[in-house]
Image (cartoon, rainbow, N blue to C red; front, side, top):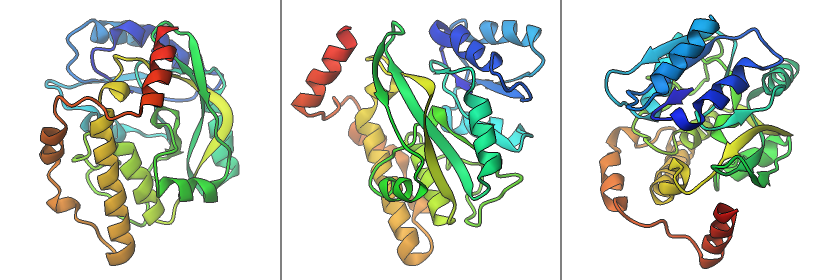
Length: 272
């Protein structure tokens, strides 16, 4: 879990992991130079639960680099992700752990999710099914795996055949780093899927990074797809030539381009 100024929801988010029915895990939390009370909240929990390991960035590194810091010290056979404002149901780790043990052909698994707003009210759901072939087909068009819902095999123990380098996530992907990773797994012929169970509560609201950076995320996701197609055709992509600052400058201060129907639907949900 990477945290940046996440104090508002952090108590509940950390508690949802510590209260899992599956208890044999290390909980790595990276504080990305938060300026609110996030670090003191993390410290409070760590004093009570030795499973928590804390990394603290001296400067804000962003989500991608922060997660890679955590992955480098992770010792478990499997790694689960969660964001600092989301919640995991109590049996999440148990269900995903059993699934990966029983399905050695699957490298990464996501799940369905209940969507909640900033007041913890249910505003919808994200229902998926366990179908690796369908998931792979869908990923070539858009991201269909929720990042905070994933559990996957530790690459230090199960290295993919396609070398990623520098960590699980490629660090030029400030956004859509998860989508780029899933497509790299497809390149490496690794199978990924989703579970139909609602294993997380995914927070979606106007002030969330997901909502605020839709335009930028969309552009980074487009680049991830372009790189995937390049690898299919040439065996390699143009990541080394990629300058993410070009995207950040072009999408700076732009309102996300949403359809009228989508804007109306989101407005209704956020007013509930």
